Image (cartoon, rainbow, N blue to C red; front, side, top):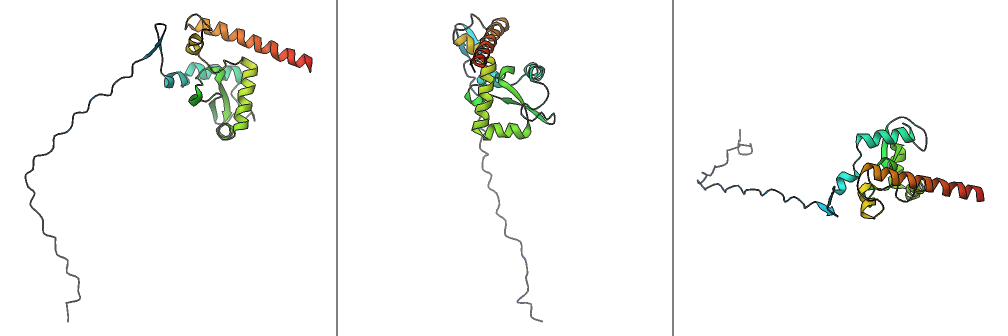
Length: 173
């Protein structure tokens, strides 16, 4: 029997480790906190915080528009869509939110014409500042301070102006 063609595994020779000193771990410096943005002595929250949807705003959206998709009326898997996208400065206020089913929510992000239609509908109903929050209006000089009362008073006035404009165009048609 010829064993020259057989496989004979042999362990590899091992190297002795040299006792090298282990490198010291670098001490990670804490990230620098960004300086909060201020305007006329008021701290303006971060863009991320202003774009997020709070439980209160979500509930108010459902009260205003119902718990069904604005397009098809489905009550299954409703998502809050930012009519003016967060990336474009849209805030998480209920006037900028639309309850949409998953299919129409995806469509709003894929079909520009559909997204534009949603924006036009919202602007006709609530005015051109529908997407804003109290800090946007304060920075634009439209309200004297950043209180919820001043914000709501201004937005209700905008809604009334938008309603009157719709009535005027309907009467001329």
